[in-house]
Each structure stands twice: as structure tokens, then as C-alpha cells.
View (cartoon, one colour):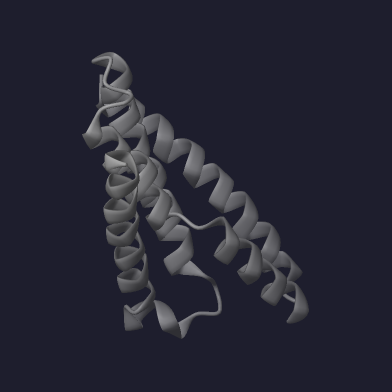
Amino acid sequence: MKQFLLVFIGGGLGSVFRFFLSQISFFNYSKFPVPTLLSNAIGCFILGIVLGYAIKNDHLNSPQTILLAAGFCGGLTTFSTFAYENITLIKNGDISQVLIYTLLSLFLGFIAIIIGLQLSK
């Protein structure tokens, strides 16, 4: 039961941070979904650090790892919004934006995880 509470708390905090990023007015001047891109990249970066540390120290099932990895990073990152934003771009005829957004999301996610893992060594 404690693990569920940790995921609940971490997920709430991650979701609030994602919402905060979406409310930054600087990002609202563009059709490009920058807040989601940032949320997913930041979440991947943090996940890389957390899991790298947890693996190195044999703490994969520790409360801190559950809170941060499954909870915070799970709440911060969002595949559903990514998919919806791509559908919206397609409906608006912005096919090049879909390709850029999708490839950039994958690239930044992988790079962020790799950097996070390297920093945790």
C-alpha cells in the first residue's frame, strides 16, 4: 500500500510540474508543442539519473526510486498528450511539424536518458 501512495504523491507532483510548464506564456505563441516536448525530455533526464543511481546502488525497489521514477517521472511525461498533439497537427495539415515533433521527441528522450544515466555513474 505504501508503494501506491508513493506513486500517487510523485505522480501528482510530476503532473503539477507538467501543467506549470504548459502555462508558461512564452510557449503559447507557437503552434509547436514545446511544453510537452520539454516535459517528456526533462522526465527522461530525471528518470535516467534516478534509475542509473538505483541500479548502481541496488535500490530499484526503494521508496525514493518508486516516488521519483514511477511517480514523478510518470506524472511528468505524457504519451497521450504527445499523440493528441500529433493528431491536431495532422488535422491542421502541418505534416512537417508532425515529423519534426515525433523525431525530436524520440531523439531528445533517448539523449536525455543517456545523459541522465551517465551523470549517475
